[in-house]
Image (cartoon, rainbow, N blue to C red; front, top):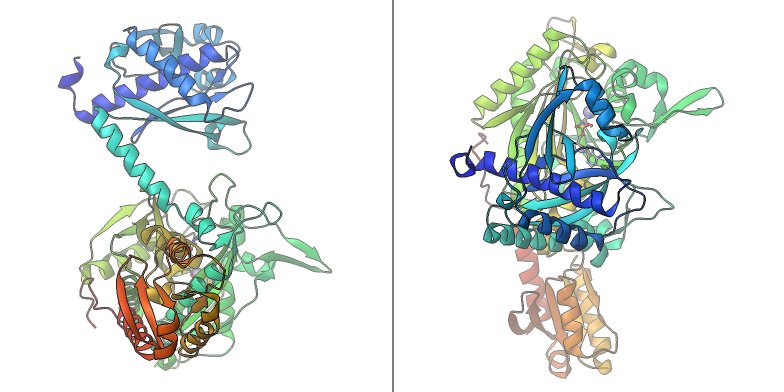
Length: 593
Ligand code: TSB
Ligand code: ZN
């Protein structure tokens, strides 16, 4: 079929798929011993996985590209054929990954495509001739496990991007370049927000003073909001006995994500993968009457999860997670109003943080997967119904995702996208009828009898690490003043102004603001530039005139000159700005305040 008659998606699918084959042929020419795995089209491009005698470097990519272009220009056809499995096994002798794929095919015959010297096991479809392949670029090499399984060999994956026109390709590459500038891993290092160390381990970032300031500000903000909303804060240890997690069900359904037990004297301890069991025990510490409910137990709790090494990275997916966690113990009648209360907290926090681009995902359990999810259809039905109704009553749109629930119940997740467009969960509200049963939780009802409470698990700003990664990228490091680790840099014009500069800094600090002095003997302009590069909101330049008038000459990081003003006036101005930012007009949907 002629390419131009197909839908754009079909055309791009064939083109990208064909480019993957052409890339494989180029790699075969460079590495005759190469072992081939799979090479599918993906969003924006394609990849192919290989096992090669040496690691590829980015410098190899132009060479591979040049070989591909030569093949594309030669206008070679893609030829389809079939053979029996037995023939295919012979044909692909010495290609262990292809052999494994052939063995996994149910049909008698297998489908193949050939272009030039490269024959591949493949269902197609492809373009007819190599000249139909449009502009592309190879972008990176990464490690990828065969079949995504970390117990299988690690292969090398070459990624390419491809669009129908050069303009679309250029546009995409430009957007990626912009995104790379905002990448929180790059900015996190440059702005001294966090570091990592091989000696500590992957997924275990260390927050530097500036990162610690941001995290503390996020925590203080949420603690205030939660106190106002009737939450009680607790502190619980990062360890617990295996027994505890056997009771809760984590041991049975969540063990893959847990660190192995530590045997000590006569105890077996694990790092907590979630805070719920500890909070449940706090609820159980005394008897509760229906009049006390809902009881909202909150903690910035640390959870330790064994996330696969391939997926941890920067701050967005870590192995020690500091979660803005809470467990709400309530009656069945209170679920919806508590749910709405959490939504209000989320809306308010997002408005303050400047997060506007997000969607609601109803995350469901796969009931046939009894390893991952507790088995109890009635419970799943009820949880899902409650969440659906709660969202409908709030008039909030949501989409559904199978196999994304917690092991104990369905969740309503709030999804954001990182600079590269990858979706991740920031906030979550979960309905749980399971843990209350496991721990035999009760409250005394109006009738004087024991009743079972429900637990709502929730994270409003989610994990502080993930939130920080998101905010760094959202603001490209230029945090709003209330969240900026350093709000004002005082810059003395000459050494003789250093004393006055320190006086200004002390005044700002006494007013609760975060200020520093750049006392280096650099030129003033280069100090201003450095402060701008550090994305510090205000630069306060001080010389003879300012010292005399108890003033500061104010510049913003955007390059605006606000001229000279008395120190106290600058302090008032900053405090106003912060107060306004922290009580924004609520933009989101009306959740019935
Ligand atoms: C909300 N027990 C509940 C809690 O009470 C719980 O732990 N839920 S969770 O497993 O869904 O995790 C809560 C949130 O933590 C997620 O929504 C996500 O925002 C964040 N999170 C989970 N794993 C990671 C990770 N590896 N790195 C960063 N953040 C994570
Ligand atoms: Zn929980």
